Length: 306
Image 1 (cartoon, one colour):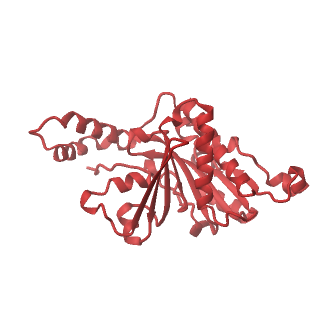
Image 2 (tube, helix red, strand yellow):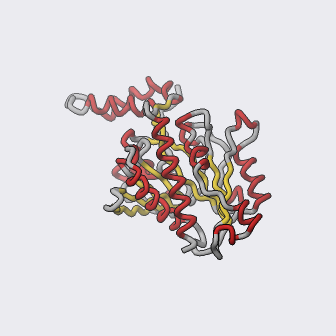
């Protein structure tokens, strides 16, 4: 019988899953602060050593998590504030932030599956400039400095017959961007973070890892250029929901050892490991948050030219 495993793409949740005894795990630093204007809690998890990376199940690097509880609400002004916050945090991770660069934005995911369409829908709203600058120069935008932004929607292997990493690597070799920004939908451990959290990391990404569908990684090692990954959790493992419900039901049962009971029952719903849940309004949410992410990238590309 397969073991029950909670899947999450969020480094913050991986850190939270470490037992109390290991709460001071060496090689992991955590910084938290609250941006009152945007009503956003920002947590930076910095993994410095290979041992810490192994314990966390995440590569060495920096993981910035923005928690915005009202991100699912249809408030355009608030989404603009989140985009500005995202732009600032993104610039902190982008190499050579003051330099004029060529940036390739890759929207991962399947456009036909709503919960997995964050990447493609984000690409739809980007301000693409590379072709204009190459054809007409920067004078077309009435400026002396301008980032060249290009975008790619590689699709999924079931449609293309090619690994995403193969497609991206081919484009990188042909167009020679200075940095990649990869957008993808993620899986969360906690329902409260669903569609309300943005993670930014400088470690790249392994497409499909959150749902156990591992594909070749997109990293600086595999592509030869820095890779910044931006993601929003849009699904939760069904087994996690059942486990959390059991814990809440048994919290008031003093005679029951909740941890041991849930641990035994987890094997009984291991078949749920391949089922993922999302909200009923996911179509509207994806449309909204993908625009928020695209605006954050657009703002970042403008800010680094100020």
